[in-house]
Image 1: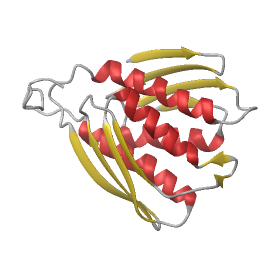
Image 2: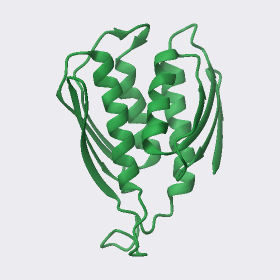
Image 3: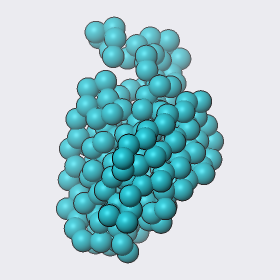
Amino acid sequence: MSEVTRKTKETDITVKTNLYGDGKYNINTKIGFFDHMLEALSKHSMIDMDIVCDGDIHIDYHHSVEDVAITLAKAIRKDLFPISSINRFASRDIVMDEACVECGIDVSNRAFLVFDLPISGKIGDFDTELVEEFFRALAFNLGITLHLVLKRGVNKHHIVECAFKSFAITFREAIAKNDKNSVPSTKGII
């Protein structure tokens, strides 16, 4: 179990995670749609998450969303690295109604993001451009290569929720323990 706190002029965040948990969550960012996405992320990744964020949402949601991703990534990273005996790679297509999002992950300690979800506008009062900000901050602070690609879909809510679930399930598979008891790299280190 890891705990990370991040306090800035814009946000005050505490995140607790259990990397190999049961998908239990207690999440309060004061951003309804974002809480819903984080709950899906926790449930489907099987990572227990306790996330509390007090942010400057009177301005907009950007600082809260990005800083939660940074803090969450740092908490997960504490339990993940140094890496040994995990699958490392995973790729999945996940569907939700008409939407299908492909996710590919390499737990490589090399940060990269390919984000190809052409969505714009709002879902309720949530700016959809913040979805890319979340995944960029998560990938770069966690040190993973992450590809998220929309294969089909129309409904923005379905597409974004599908992306969070696709990431969650793919990440769960990438960090799954294997019985090889070795670092999954020809370099001998990740």
